[in-house]
Image (cartoon, one colour):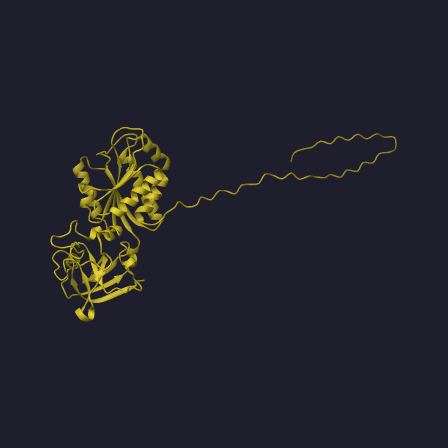
Amino acid sequence: MALFNAHGRVSWFGGPEDTGVSPSEDLAWFETWDQVVDADAEHLFLSTQPPGTTGLARRLNPETHFVACRWDYSSTPKSMLKDQRYKARVSAGGKSFLVSPIDWGPHEQETGRAADISSGLMSALGISTDDIVDVEYPYEEAVAMRIAMSSGHSTKCQGAIGYLNEVEEATRAVDRIAEIWKENGIECWTFHDTTSTDSSTNLNKITDWHNSRPSHELDVSVHLNAYQSTSKPMGCECLYVTQSSLASKVAAAMAGALQLPNRGGKFRDDLFVLNQTNAPCVLLECCFVDSTSDADAWRARFEDFCYQTASAIAGRTMQPPDTEQPPIEPPPVAVEQVVGVHISAPPGVRVDVDIVETQG
């Protein structure tokens, strides 16, 4: 059930061209960049602060989709509004989009408007300033996260091969993590490239697949790492462009499950998939294929790795179902049996009796 609804005229706001906000103006629940990072909301903002500005309102990326309304903080507090798992549905002209609440919005009695939205969302809806929109928050179908996940490389364009085969193990991890998510009510899609024969085709095929999925909150690319043959443990890392907080959590979860070094979240702006997916994306480097310690840990703790990684990405704990053990039958209890025997014999007759114990 939605906790907030709005209906009325709309305008646009946010980004470098919005002179209706001051160069130093921040947002209602994002007053510092650290708060943006902690909420995994970097994808809503430009990568750098526009020249001549210091506020986050002017740093908003106008091509992303966001909305500002006069929210009721008693039923939809700031802590909920900044949570990227919860989306608002903005509808107009027969079109609807799931978007992120971003700010305290216009005063309808003073401005005549019920909502402010990004110029990108306005364009996607095919509407103009002062057209009518409907806002519903939180939109029930948006509460459950939806994820598109792919394995790196291709069966015909292999990745790293050592004590483990990257393509084979990434495929196995993607399929198992997806099973866990589906068991816990999380909608997800998976992809493995089995046709590309060169890196360029492979990268484009993977990103095209991600971007062709229905609306979703996160893209995940699964890889295994390589450096040089070694027996020492090398560890786990998670690469990102915008999702630094999530990447740190995922790296820690992978390392904890495999009992390998935590190499942390690592910013990488030079990787094709991270830059080309429309949704926020993280790239997992699960372990090193050329480390015997990593390979042994991977084989021994794969199931725990999948559960811990699935939990970290989805933001909630997932555990394997309890396995019921068959009841243990108690050992048979020896029961003493008494047999009564009456023997009659005439005087002078001797009677011999042998007692033989039998089983059963």
